[in-house]
Image 1 (cartoon, helix red, strand yellow):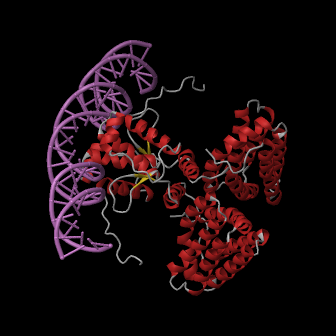
Image 2 (tube, chains in turn orange, blue, cyan, green):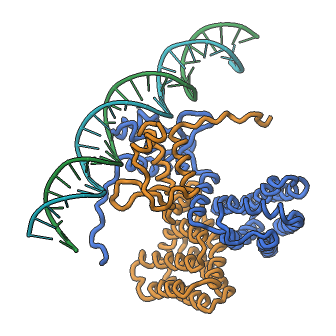
Image 3 (tube, rainbow over the protein chains, first blue to last red):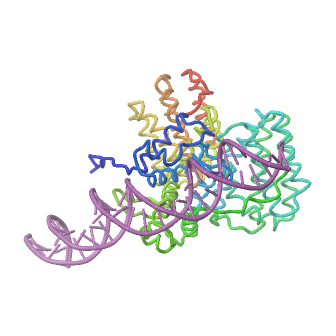
Length: 242
Length: 242
DNA sequence: CCGCATCATATTGTCCGACAATCCGACAGG
DNA sequence: CCTGTCGGATTGTCGGACAATATGATGCGG
């Protein structure tokens, strides 16, 4: 039988405190950049012990809603950075035993759409940045790691050109999971660099021309190339991502 | 000037503790479902105070790496649920001022790929479940909320049929953000239900026939219909998602 | 032997008080 | 304007305490 009653909700104080603060942040009553009251003050206002407040703060901190300025002590209201979100998501994906092929497939699904959106909406500034990123990859991708970072930067620049925060946030975890295997490809497949360079060039061209269809097509080809890369590099597609 | 030195890294104890535990979970030395040692025991092993351990645990708890069984007291190792990940991501998107149109665009980019993957790989069981979900929407979508849930369930079933955990996790936050505006559409656009029903039927058919191209096409049309829905319902596409 | 109520124990949630380290802001001096 | 100094405020960490209750063992009846 389906349960008739919910267990009556009791929430420990540290949870209620963190929810209260979270709610105010989401309602923007606490603005980004604003410093949080001190722990002692919060304890006074919520009428709980400082230890309890601290537990609540740790939750919000790890959710990325609170952070501190470099080397700082006090907490400030922040919005979750791409890195924070990406970290959580890629961690979750790793634990869900996502495989290389799964990540690849997701890229194949998402990136053409991003490229198309970027082509339609890119600003001049974003285009310039995108072109610069592609150029940097072409002329200065000496080390293996520099090359990998360069590829990721290109995807990031493209998502930024699309001016859609959803794309920005979705990109991060996928790229993070892509990187390790991409490093192997670049190590083992000699022609990888030039193929990537060519694809990026074509995509930049399509974005410049505001040709959404071409941008999506080239991106689709670009991502498909990665799959070829996996095969040539002898990477088992069923390998779980780290 | 570009900075010459990194700030030398000091991490408070509660962070080091939480990182230590997190690392062991990610390396699967602590298996999912396994109970964590008690707080006192952890404090003994790490040689820190119990309060410090508790702060570390709160971080892991909110990351979804630790959870407790219903009404339980002890913490268990868990992997982040779709809901946990989706909650964090959609919260981040809200704070990044994502707009309805941004979410829609992301759906437009992702869902056809998911549909195609589902068509290629669906198992009989997944297909049956997908068909059942579509059928349920068709015959029993009385209330506004039931209809909205039904639509989301269909997307979920499709992602499940695609057997790709990445799709599963990406779906959740998008659907969560879609729901409120979808509710408005269903309220205000009389023909919405029948159009959704038709699209879902066509997609099920394509998935059954393992026709990836057709599945992607129908899905693309389906999502494009949502956009029409926004316009007919008079929803400003630039509205920020909740 | 199994299911169920009972009970002692362990564990968590919360509080209090304390103290060292250090960040912060003000202030003075070159 | 930059640098050094200084006192106060704030965080990080600790130890100890206690109530509430989940947990696991125990014993009883079927």
